Length: 104
Image (cartoon, rainbow, N blue to C red; front, side, top):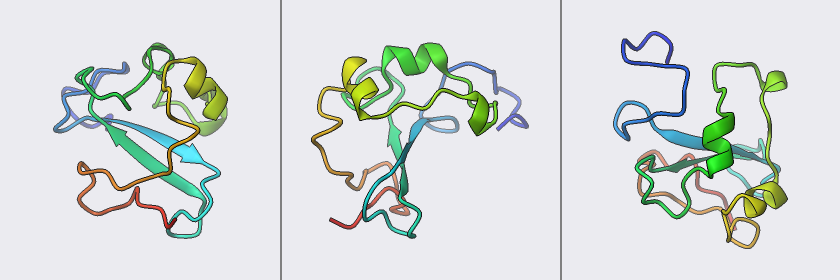
């Protein structure tokens, strides 16, 4: 992403070239056998499953995994992603190759 002319080290996204996504680890039944999914969401503020204010404030996608803050279900729920812990991972209409789909 850093090679894109309009890329900035912040949480901005245009929902076309740069988008919001979160890596969710420990997902039982995730396809590919890695127990991890990528959850894509709109960045325009109208997506109820979009980034929480804490995710926008803490965004540091350019850092290594060891340097970034990782959230679990409790933290997502505390930050306003109300249904996070009770929802199953589902296919997103924004994911045309279905990488976020998890087997039930």
